Length: 502
Ligand SMILES: *Cc1c(COP(=O)(O)O)cnc(C)c1O
Image 1: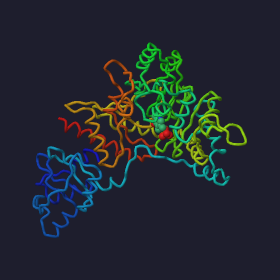
Image 2 (image 1 turned 45 degrees about the vertical axis):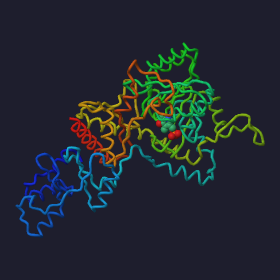
Image 3 (image 1 turned 180 degrees about the vertical axis):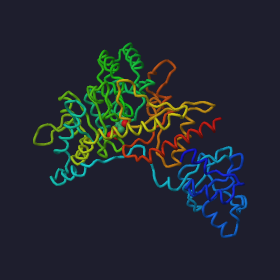
Image 4 (image 1 turned 90 degrees about the vertical axis):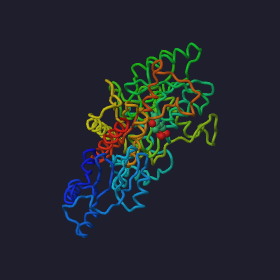
Protein backbone atom coordinates (compact mmCIF):
# COMPACT_ATOMS: atom_id res chain seq x y z
CA UNK A 1 0.00 0.00 0.00
CA UNK A 2 1.36 3.44 -0.80
CA UNK A 3 1.43 6.46 1.47
CA UNK A 4 -1.76 7.98 0.02
CA UNK A 5 -3.70 4.78 0.56
CA UNK A 6 -2.32 4.54 4.06
CA UNK A 7 -3.23 8.16 4.85
CA UNK A 8 -6.75 7.54 3.55
CA UNK A 9 -7.19 4.90 6.27
CA UNK A 10 -6.74 7.48 9.02
CA UNK A 11 -9.81 9.19 10.50
CA UNK A 12 -10.29 11.53 13.48
CA UNK A 13 -12.39 10.32 16.43
CA UNK A 14 -14.99 12.95 15.59
CA UNK A 15 -15.82 11.32 12.24
CA UNK A 16 -19.26 9.70 12.17
CA UNK A 17 -20.02 6.02 11.80
CA UNK A 18 -21.52 6.83 8.42
CA UNK A 19 -18.32 8.52 7.30
CA UNK A 20 -16.36 5.53 8.54
CA UNK A 21 -18.54 3.13 6.54
CA UNK A 22 -18.06 5.20 3.40
CA UNK A 23 -14.28 5.32 3.99
CA UNK A 24 -14.08 1.56 4.62
CA UNK A 25 -15.90 1.05 1.36
CA UNK A 26 -13.66 3.44 -0.59
CA UNK A 27 -10.34 2.14 0.77
CA UNK A 28 -11.33 -1.55 0.71
CA UNK A 29 -8.67 -2.63 3.23
CA UNK A 30 -11.16 -3.88 5.83
CA UNK A 31 -9.80 -1.54 8.48
CA UNK A 32 -9.56 2.14 9.45
CA UNK A 33 -7.22 3.85 11.89
CA UNK A 34 -8.67 6.38 14.30
CA UNK A 35 -5.94 8.89 15.10
CA UNK A 36 -5.72 12.04 17.19
CA UNK A 37 -4.27 15.35 16.03
CA UNK A 38 -0.75 14.09 16.89
CA UNK A 39 -1.18 11.03 14.59
CA UNK A 40 -1.38 8.74 17.61
CA UNK A 41 -3.48 5.66 17.13
CA UNK A 42 -6.58 5.66 19.36
CA UNK A 43 -8.18 2.53 17.98
CA UNK A 44 -8.87 0.60 14.82
CA UNK A 45 -12.31 0.27 13.23
CA UNK A 46 -13.35 -2.75 11.20
CA UNK A 47 -16.52 -3.78 9.41
CA UNK A 48 -17.33 -5.89 12.46
CA UNK A 49 -17.12 -2.92 14.84
CA UNK A 50 -19.57 -0.95 12.72
CA UNK A 51 -21.92 -3.92 12.33
CA UNK A 52 -22.02 -4.48 16.09
CA UNK A 53 -22.64 -0.75 16.68
CA UNK A 54 -25.56 -0.81 14.22
CA UNK A 55 -27.03 -3.89 15.95
CA UNK A 56 -26.66 -2.16 19.33
CA UNK A 57 -28.67 0.77 17.96
CA UNK A 58 -25.84 3.32 17.81
CA UNK A 59 -26.81 6.10 15.39
CA UNK A 60 -25.07 6.38 12.04
CA UNK A 61 -24.41 10.01 12.89
CA UNK A 62 -22.66 9.23 16.20
CA UNK A 63 -18.91 9.90 16.29
CA UNK A 64 -16.44 7.01 16.30
CA UNK A 65 -15.56 7.98 19.88
CA UNK A 66 -19.02 6.64 20.87
CA UNK A 67 -17.92 3.07 20.03
CA UNK A 68 -16.99 0.86 23.00
CA UNK A 69 -13.31 1.41 23.74
CA UNK A 70 -10.86 -1.27 22.80
CA UNK A 71 -7.13 -0.60 22.79
CA UNK A 72 -5.43 -1.40 19.48
CA UNK A 73 -2.87 -4.19 19.03
CA UNK A 74 0.20 -2.67 17.42
CA UNK A 75 3.88 -3.37 16.82
CA UNK A 76 6.91 -1.08 16.75
CA UNK A 77 9.27 -0.39 13.84
CA UNK A 78 11.62 -3.11 15.12
CA UNK A 79 8.99 -5.85 14.85
CA UNK A 80 9.74 -8.67 12.46
CA UNK A 81 7.29 -10.35 10.14
CA UNK A 82 7.20 -13.25 12.59
CA UNK A 83 6.26 -10.89 15.46
CA UNK A 84 3.44 -9.48 13.36
CA UNK A 85 2.15 -12.91 12.40
CA UNK A 86 2.29 -14.09 16.01
CA UNK A 87 0.23 -11.08 17.10
CA UNK A 88 -2.30 -11.68 14.31
CA UNK A 89 -2.71 -15.30 15.33
CA UNK A 90 -2.87 -14.59 19.07
CA UNK A 91 -5.46 -11.83 18.69
CA UNK A 92 -7.24 -13.37 15.70
CA UNK A 93 -6.86 -10.19 13.66
CA UNK A 94 -5.84 -9.64 10.04
CA UNK A 95 -4.28 -6.17 10.29
CA UNK A 96 -1.53 -4.85 12.51
CA UNK A 97 -0.73 -1.11 12.63
CA UNK A 98 2.92 -0.13 13.07
CA UNK A 99 3.76 2.63 15.52
CA UNK A 100 7.05 4.56 15.56
CA UNK A 101 9.10 5.56 18.61
CA UNK A 102 7.17 8.82 18.97
CA UNK A 103 3.88 6.92 19.10
CA UNK A 104 2.75 7.91 15.57
CA UNK A 105 1.00 5.27 13.55
CA UNK A 106 3.06 5.02 10.35
CA UNK A 107 2.22 1.76 8.61
CA UNK A 108 -0.17 -1.17 8.42
CA UNK A 109 0.67 -4.82 7.76
CA UNK A 110 -2.08 -7.07 6.37
CA UNK A 111 -2.40 -10.83 6.57
CA UNK A 112 -2.88 -10.96 2.82
CA UNK A 113 0.63 -9.58 2.24
CA UNK A 114 2.08 -12.14 4.61
CA UNK A 115 0.73 -14.98 2.49
CA UNK A 116 2.27 -13.65 -0.75
CA UNK A 117 6.04 -13.37 -0.50
CA UNK A 118 7.95 -11.48 -3.17
CA UNK A 119 11.30 -13.18 -3.70
CA UNK A 120 14.61 -11.56 -4.53
CA UNK A 121 15.26 -13.75 -7.56
CA UNK A 122 13.38 -17.00 -7.99
CA UNK A 123 13.77 -19.68 -10.66
CA UNK A 124 11.71 -19.14 -13.82
CA UNK A 125 11.27 -22.17 -16.06
CA UNK A 126 10.60 -21.96 -19.79
CA UNK A 127 8.58 -24.31 -21.97
CA UNK A 128 11.27 -26.75 -23.09
CA UNK A 129 12.93 -27.86 -19.86
CA UNK A 130 10.51 -30.63 -18.99
CA UNK A 131 10.73 -32.17 -22.46
CA UNK A 132 14.53 -32.04 -22.39
CA UNK A 133 14.69 -33.67 -18.98
CA UNK A 134 12.17 -36.24 -20.20
CA UNK A 135 14.54 -36.99 -23.07
CA UNK A 136 17.31 -37.73 -20.55
CA UNK A 137 14.98 -40.18 -18.81
CA UNK A 138 13.70 -41.96 -21.91
CA UNK A 139 17.19 -42.34 -23.35
CA UNK A 140 18.37 -43.56 -19.91
CA UNK A 141 21.06 -40.85 -19.75
CA UNK A 142 20.49 -40.27 -16.04
CA UNK A 143 24.16 -40.90 -15.34
CA UNK A 144 26.45 -37.89 -15.26
CA UNK A 145 27.68 -36.98 -18.72
CA UNK A 146 25.70 -37.62 -21.84
CA UNK A 147 24.37 -35.79 -24.86
CA UNK A 148 22.76 -32.89 -22.96
CA UNK A 149 26.06 -32.03 -21.28
CA UNK A 150 27.88 -31.86 -24.62
CA UNK A 151 25.05 -29.86 -26.22
CA UNK A 152 24.75 -27.48 -23.28
CA UNK A 153 28.48 -26.77 -23.45
CA UNK A 154 28.33 -26.12 -27.20
CA UNK A 155 25.23 -23.96 -26.97
CA UNK A 156 26.48 -21.87 -24.08
CA UNK A 157 29.89 -21.36 -25.70
CA UNK A 158 28.17 -20.19 -28.89
CA UNK A 159 25.91 -17.82 -26.93
CA UNK A 160 28.88 -16.30 -25.12
CA UNK A 161 31.16 -16.15 -28.16
CA UNK A 162 33.91 -18.42 -26.85
CA UNK A 163 35.17 -21.63 -28.37
CA UNK A 164 35.10 -24.13 -25.51
CA UNK A 165 33.14 -24.80 -22.35
CA UNK A 166 33.14 -27.38 -19.56
CA UNK A 167 29.94 -27.85 -17.54
CA UNK A 168 30.42 -28.14 -13.78
CA UNK A 169 28.33 -28.91 -10.73
CA UNK A 170 28.46 -25.26 -9.60
CA UNK A 171 29.96 -21.88 -10.38
CA UNK A 172 32.18 -22.27 -7.34
CA UNK A 173 33.54 -25.56 -8.71
CA UNK A 174 34.26 -23.80 -12.03
CA UNK A 175 36.15 -21.04 -10.17
CA UNK A 176 38.18 -23.61 -8.26
CA UNK A 177 39.03 -25.46 -11.49
CA UNK A 178 39.84 -22.21 -13.28
CA UNK A 179 42.34 -21.15 -10.63
CA UNK A 180 43.89 -24.63 -10.63
CA UNK A 181 44.30 -24.43 -14.41
CA UNK A 182 46.05 -21.09 -14.07
CA UNK A 183 48.52 -22.79 -11.76
CA UNK A 184 47.43 -21.10 -8.53
CA UNK A 185 48.90 -22.86 -5.52
CA UNK A 186 50.43 -22.36 -2.07
CA UNK A 187 52.30 -19.08 -1.65
CA UNK A 188 50.77 -17.38 -4.68
CA UNK A 189 49.01 -14.01 -4.63
CA UNK A 190 45.70 -13.69 -6.50
CA UNK A 191 43.91 -10.39 -7.06
CA UNK A 192 40.15 -10.38 -6.52
CA UNK A 193 37.29 -7.86 -6.57
CA UNK A 194 36.30 -7.12 -2.99
CA UNK A 195 32.63 -6.38 -3.68
CA UNK A 196 31.40 -9.87 -4.49
CA UNK A 197 29.92 -13.09 -3.22
CA UNK A 198 32.33 -15.08 -1.06
CA UNK A 199 32.58 -17.86 -3.67
CA UNK A 200 34.79 -15.60 -5.82
CA UNK A 201 37.46 -15.60 -3.12
CA UNK A 202 37.19 -18.92 -1.29
CA UNK A 203 38.85 -21.10 -3.95
CA UNK A 204 41.90 -18.81 -3.82
CA UNK A 205 42.31 -19.52 -0.13
CA UNK A 206 41.44 -23.19 -0.55
CA UNK A 207 44.30 -23.58 -3.03
CA UNK A 208 46.70 -22.19 -0.42
CA UNK A 209 47.10 -18.82 -2.16
CA UNK A 210 46.56 -15.38 -0.67
CA UNK A 211 43.87 -13.07 -2.03
CA UNK A 212 44.58 -9.36 -2.38
CA UNK A 213 41.34 -7.42 -2.67
CA UNK A 214 40.61 -4.53 -5.00
CA UNK A 215 38.01 -1.81 -4.42
CA UNK A 216 35.12 -0.88 -6.73
CA UNK A 217 34.71 2.25 -8.77
CA UNK A 218 31.66 4.39 -7.99
CA UNK A 219 29.94 4.28 -11.40
CA UNK A 220 29.60 0.62 -12.38
CA UNK A 221 30.34 -0.67 -8.84
CA UNK A 222 32.79 -3.11 -10.45
CA UNK A 223 36.53 -3.49 -9.99
CA UNK A 224 38.25 -0.09 -9.92
CA UNK A 225 40.91 0.10 -12.69
CA UNK A 226 42.51 2.88 -10.69
CA UNK A 227 42.88 0.68 -7.61
CA UNK A 228 44.06 -2.22 -9.78
CA UNK A 229 46.85 -0.07 -11.26
CA UNK A 230 48.03 0.94 -7.79
CA UNK A 231 47.92 -2.67 -6.57
CA UNK A 232 49.87 -4.04 -9.53
CA UNK A 233 52.55 -1.38 -9.18
CA UNK A 234 52.82 -1.82 -5.41
CA UNK A 235 53.12 -5.60 -5.70
CA UNK A 236 55.66 -5.33 -8.49
CA UNK A 237 57.78 -3.06 -6.31
CA UNK A 238 57.81 -5.88 -3.78
CA UNK A 239 58.80 -8.38 -6.44
CA UNK A 240 55.37 -10.04 -6.51
CA UNK A 241 53.57 -10.99 -9.72
CA UNK A 242 50.01 -12.11 -8.97
CA UNK A 243 49.30 -15.56 -10.36
CA UNK A 244 45.81 -14.55 -11.51
CA UNK A 245 43.09 -11.91 -11.12
CA UNK A 246 39.47 -12.83 -10.37
CA UNK A 247 37.50 -9.98 -11.95
CA UNK A 248 33.81 -10.02 -10.99
CA UNK A 249 30.94 -8.71 -13.14
CA UNK A 250 28.47 -7.55 -10.53
CA UNK A 251 24.67 -7.81 -10.57
CA UNK A 252 24.47 -8.46 -14.32
CA UNK A 253 27.02 -5.89 -15.47
CA UNK A 254 30.49 -6.25 -16.91
CA UNK A 255 33.53 -4.67 -15.31
CA UNK A 256 35.43 -1.94 -17.22
CA UNK A 257 37.30 -4.37 -19.46
CA UNK A 258 38.80 -1.68 -21.76
CA UNK A 259 40.92 -0.55 -18.85
CA UNK A 260 41.31 -3.78 -16.89
CA UNK A 261 42.41 -6.13 -19.71
CA UNK A 262 45.41 -4.05 -20.93
CA UNK A 263 46.50 -3.37 -17.34
CA UNK A 264 46.58 -7.07 -16.48
CA UNK A 265 48.30 -7.88 -19.79
CA UNK A 266 51.01 -5.33 -19.10
CA UNK A 267 51.85 -7.10 -15.84
CA UNK A 268 51.41 -10.59 -17.28
CA UNK A 269 48.51 -11.51 -14.98
CA UNK A 270 45.87 -13.84 -16.49
CA UNK A 271 42.24 -12.94 -15.84
CA UNK A 272 39.65 -15.37 -14.50
CA UNK A 273 36.40 -13.58 -15.23
CA UNK A 274 33.71 -14.30 -12.64
CA UNK A 275 30.66 -13.89 -14.86
CA UNK A 276 28.39 -15.88 -12.51
CA UNK A 277 26.02 -12.90 -12.31
CA UNK A 278 26.42 -11.50 -15.83
CA UNK A 279 25.31 -14.15 -18.32
CA UNK A 280 23.50 -12.29 -21.12
CA UNK A 281 25.22 -8.94 -20.53
CA UNK A 282 27.48 -7.24 -23.07
CA UNK A 283 30.35 -4.80 -22.89
CA UNK A 284 31.04 -2.81 -26.09
CA UNK A 285 28.80 -5.33 -27.87
CA UNK A 286 30.88 -8.29 -26.71
CA UNK A 287 29.27 -10.89 -24.44
CA UNK A 288 30.24 -10.79 -20.79
CA UNK A 289 32.38 -13.82 -20.00
CA UNK A 290 34.36 -13.59 -23.24
CA UNK A 291 37.11 -11.34 -21.88
CA UNK A 292 39.04 -13.55 -19.48
CA UNK A 293 41.58 -16.22 -20.32
CA UNK A 294 38.97 -18.26 -18.48
CA UNK A 295 35.48 -17.26 -17.38
CA UNK A 296 32.92 -18.76 -15.06
CA UNK A 297 29.12 -18.86 -15.13
CA UNK A 298 26.69 -20.06 -12.47
CA UNK A 299 23.28 -21.71 -12.86
CA UNK A 300 22.42 -21.62 -9.19
CA UNK A 301 18.73 -21.24 -8.35
CA UNK A 302 18.83 -17.46 -7.98
CA UNK A 303 20.80 -16.68 -11.15
CA UNK A 304 19.28 -15.34 -14.38
CA UNK A 305 18.95 -18.88 -15.73
CA UNK A 306 19.27 -21.94 -13.56
CA UNK A 307 19.75 -25.70 -13.55
CA UNK A 308 18.92 -25.67 -9.81
CA UNK A 309 22.67 -25.94 -9.35
CA UNK A 310 25.43 -25.86 -11.91
CA UNK A 311 28.19 -23.87 -13.54
CA UNK A 312 30.36 -23.53 -16.63
CA UNK A 313 34.00 -22.81 -17.25
CA UNK A 314 34.68 -21.27 -20.68
CA UNK A 315 37.77 -20.35 -22.66
CA UNK A 316 39.13 -20.03 -26.18
CA UNK A 317 41.96 -22.33 -25.11
CA UNK A 318 41.00 -25.90 -25.99
CA UNK A 319 43.79 -27.40 -23.88
CA UNK A 320 42.61 -25.65 -20.73
CA UNK A 321 39.01 -26.79 -21.17
CA UNK A 322 40.08 -30.34 -22.00
CA UNK A 323 42.10 -30.33 -18.79
CA UNK A 324 39.13 -28.92 -16.86
CA UNK A 325 36.97 -31.83 -18.03
CA UNK A 326 39.61 -34.28 -16.87
CA UNK A 327 40.10 -32.65 -13.46
CA UNK A 328 36.33 -32.42 -12.94
CA UNK A 329 35.89 -36.18 -13.44
CA UNK A 330 38.46 -37.40 -10.88
CA UNK A 331 41.43 -36.85 -13.24
CA UNK A 332 41.40 -40.34 -14.63
CA UNK A 333 44.23 -41.21 -17.01
CA UNK A 334 43.50 -43.02 -20.29
CA UNK A 335 43.89 -46.62 -19.16
CA UNK A 336 41.63 -49.63 -18.78
CA UNK A 337 41.93 -49.51 -14.99
CA UNK A 338 41.64 -46.39 -12.83
CA UNK A 339 45.03 -44.71 -13.16
CA UNK A 340 45.70 -41.34 -11.46
CA UNK A 341 48.62 -38.97 -11.72
CA UNK A 342 46.85 -35.70 -10.94
CA UNK A 343 44.65 -34.70 -8.06
CA UNK A 344 41.07 -34.41 -9.38
CA UNK A 345 37.53 -33.59 -8.30
CA UNK A 346 33.97 -34.73 -8.82
CA UNK A 347 32.80 -31.46 -10.35
CA UNK A 348 30.90 -32.44 -13.50
CA UNK A 349 27.33 -31.34 -14.24
CA UNK A 350 24.82 -34.18 -14.62
CA UNK A 351 23.10 -34.89 -17.91
CA UNK A 352 19.65 -34.31 -16.36
CA UNK A 353 20.57 -30.84 -15.14
CA UNK A 354 22.24 -29.99 -18.44
CA UNK A 355 18.85 -30.71 -20.05
CA UNK A 356 17.31 -28.02 -17.86
CA UNK A 357 20.17 -25.71 -18.77
CA UNK A 358 19.54 -26.12 -22.49
CA UNK A 359 15.91 -25.19 -22.06
CA UNK A 360 16.85 -22.20 -19.91
CA UNK A 361 19.39 -20.98 -22.43
CA UNK A 362 16.64 -20.77 -25.06
CA UNK A 363 14.78 -18.19 -22.95
CA UNK A 364 17.83 -16.23 -21.76
CA UNK A 365 17.08 -13.27 -24.02
CA UNK A 366 13.53 -12.98 -22.63
CA UNK A 367 14.85 -13.24 -19.08
CA UNK A 368 17.29 -10.39 -19.71
CA UNK A 369 14.47 -8.31 -21.19
CA UNK A 370 12.18 -8.97 -18.21
CA UNK A 371 14.82 -8.10 -15.64
CA UNK A 372 15.62 -4.89 -17.47
CA UNK A 373 11.92 -4.04 -17.45
CA UNK A 374 11.72 -4.65 -13.71
CA UNK A 375 14.60 -2.23 -13.26
CA UNK A 376 13.08 0.39 -15.55
CA UNK A 377 9.80 0.24 -13.66
CA UNK A 378 11.57 0.73 -10.32
CA UNK A 379 13.64 3.59 -11.65
CA UNK A 380 10.61 5.39 -13.11
CA UNK A 381 8.30 4.78 -10.17
CA UNK A 382 10.91 5.91 -7.63
CA UNK A 383 12.35 8.81 -9.64
CA UNK A 384 10.87 11.33 -7.21
CA UNK A 385 12.30 9.68 -4.11
CA UNK A 386 15.26 11.67 -2.76
CA UNK A 387 18.55 10.20 -1.52
CA UNK A 388 18.56 7.12 -3.75
CA UNK A 389 21.18 6.41 -6.46
CA UNK A 390 20.78 3.43 -8.79
CA UNK A 391 23.72 1.30 -9.90
CA UNK A 392 24.64 3.08 -13.15
CA UNK A 393 24.85 1.49 -16.59
CA UNK A 394 27.78 3.44 -18.03
CA UNK A 395 28.17 4.03 -21.76
CA UNK A 396 29.20 0.85 -23.59
CA UNK A 397 27.54 -1.43 -21.04
CA UNK A 398 24.41 -3.49 -21.51
CA UNK A 399 23.48 -4.88 -18.11
CA UNK A 400 21.01 -7.69 -17.54
CA UNK A 401 19.98 -6.02 -14.27
CA UNK A 402 20.18 -9.45 -12.68
CA UNK A 403 19.49 -7.57 -9.47
CA UNK A 404 18.12 -4.03 -9.35
CA UNK A 405 20.31 -2.24 -6.83
CA UNK A 406 20.61 1.26 -5.43
CA UNK A 407 22.60 2.98 -2.73
CA UNK A 408 21.03 5.29 -0.15
CA UNK A 409 22.46 8.57 1.00
CA UNK A 410 22.68 9.43 4.66
CA UNK A 411 21.49 12.73 6.04
CA UNK A 412 19.65 14.47 8.86
CA UNK A 413 21.81 12.66 11.37
CA UNK A 414 20.94 9.25 9.94
CA UNK A 415 23.72 7.06 8.50
CA UNK A 416 23.19 5.29 5.16
CA UNK A 417 23.42 1.98 7.00
CA UNK A 418 20.69 2.95 9.47
CA UNK A 419 18.41 4.01 6.62
CA UNK A 420 19.20 0.82 4.69
CA UNK A 421 18.42 -1.35 7.69
CA UNK A 422 15.20 0.52 8.42
CA UNK A 423 14.12 -0.01 4.82
CA UNK A 424 15.06 -3.71 4.85
CA UNK A 425 13.16 -4.21 8.14
CA UNK A 426 10.17 -2.44 6.63
CA UNK A 427 10.20 -4.57 3.47
CA UNK A 428 10.67 -7.79 5.44
CA UNK A 429 7.69 -6.92 7.63
CA UNK A 430 5.67 -6.73 4.41
CA UNK A 431 7.00 -10.07 3.18
CA UNK A 432 9.26 -8.63 0.50
CA UNK A 433 12.71 -10.21 0.18
CA UNK A 434 15.33 -7.51 -0.31
CA UNK A 435 19.02 -7.71 0.62
CA UNK A 436 21.97 -5.50 1.40
CA UNK A 437 24.56 -5.25 -1.37
CA UNK A 438 27.32 -7.89 -0.96
CA UNK A 439 29.45 -7.28 2.10
CA UNK A 440 32.94 -6.72 0.63
CA UNK A 441 35.52 -9.42 1.21
CA UNK A 442 37.98 -7.06 2.93
CA UNK A 443 35.33 -6.46 5.64
CA UNK A 444 34.68 -10.17 6.20
CA UNK A 445 36.21 -11.69 9.35
CA UNK A 446 37.31 -14.58 7.09
CA UNK A 447 39.54 -12.22 5.09
CA UNK A 448 40.31 -9.54 7.68
CA UNK A 449 44.05 -10.15 7.44
CA UNK A 450 44.18 -9.66 3.66
CA UNK A 451 45.48 -6.62 1.85
CA UNK A 452 43.06 -4.26 0.16
CA UNK A 453 43.60 -1.47 -2.37
CA UNK A 454 41.24 1.50 -2.25
CA UNK A 455 39.74 3.27 -5.26
CA UNK A 456 41.39 6.47 -4.04
CA UNK A 457 43.19 7.47 -0.83
CA UNK A 458 40.59 7.66 1.93
CA UNK A 459 37.78 6.53 -0.40
CA UNK A 460 36.51 3.04 0.32
CA UNK A 461 33.88 2.74 -2.42
CA UNK A 462 32.85 -0.88 -1.86
CA UNK A 463 32.33 -0.27 1.85
CA UNK A 464 30.07 2.70 1.11
CA UNK A 465 28.10 0.64 -1.45
CA UNK A 466 27.64 -2.08 1.15
CA UNK A 467 26.59 0.27 3.92
CA UNK A 468 23.93 2.09 1.91
CA UNK A 469 23.18 -0.49 -0.77
CA UNK A 470 19.94 -2.40 -1.31
CA UNK A 471 19.05 -5.12 -3.85
CA UNK A 472 15.35 -5.27 -4.68
CA UNK A 473 13.31 -8.25 -5.89
CA UNK A 474 14.25 -8.61 -9.54
CA UNK A 475 12.89 -11.94 -10.76
CA UNK A 476 11.86 -12.25 -14.40
CA UNK A 477 8.63 -13.91 -13.22
CA UNK A 478 7.43 -11.06 -10.99
CA UNK A 479 3.88 -10.02 -11.78
CA UNK A 480 2.96 -6.41 -12.55
CA UNK A 481 1.13 -6.29 -9.23
CA UNK A 482 4.22 -7.49 -7.35
CA UNK A 483 6.42 -4.89 -9.01
CA UNK A 484 3.95 -2.14 -8.19
CA UNK A 485 3.73 -3.38 -4.61
CA UNK A 486 7.50 -3.23 -4.20
CA UNK A 487 7.60 0.32 -5.64
CA UNK A 488 4.92 1.51 -3.21
CA UNK A 489 6.58 -0.15 -0.25
CA UNK A 490 10.03 1.24 -1.04
CA UNK A 491 8.62 4.75 -1.38
CA UNK A 492 6.68 4.39 1.87
CA UNK A 493 9.59 2.82 3.75
CA UNK A 494 12.05 5.52 2.64
CA UNK A 495 9.59 8.27 3.47
CA UNK A 496 9.43 6.88 7.01
CA UNK A 497 13.20 6.67 7.30
CA UNK A 498 13.51 10.39 6.47
CA UNK A 499 10.69 11.26 8.83
CA UNK A 500 12.15 9.34 11.76
CA UNK A 501 15.50 11.05 11.20
CA UNK A 502 14.02 14.54 11.11
C1 LIG B 1 26.60 -17.19 -7.50
C2 LIG B 1 27.99 -16.72 -7.58
C3 LIG B 1 29.09 -17.60 -7.55
C4 LIG B 1 28.95 -19.06 -7.21
O1 LIG B 1 28.17 -19.79 -8.06
P1 LIG B 1 27.50 -21.15 -7.50
O2 LIG B 1 26.93 -21.76 -8.73
O3 LIG B 1 26.46 -20.73 -6.52
O4 LIG B 1 28.56 -21.96 -6.88
C5 LIG B 1 30.35 -17.08 -7.72
N1 LIG B 1 30.55 -15.77 -7.90
C6 LIG B 1 29.55 -14.89 -7.89
C7 LIG B 1 29.86 -13.46 -8.12
C8 LIG B 1 28.24 -15.32 -7.72
O5 LIG B 1 27.25 -14.43 -7.68
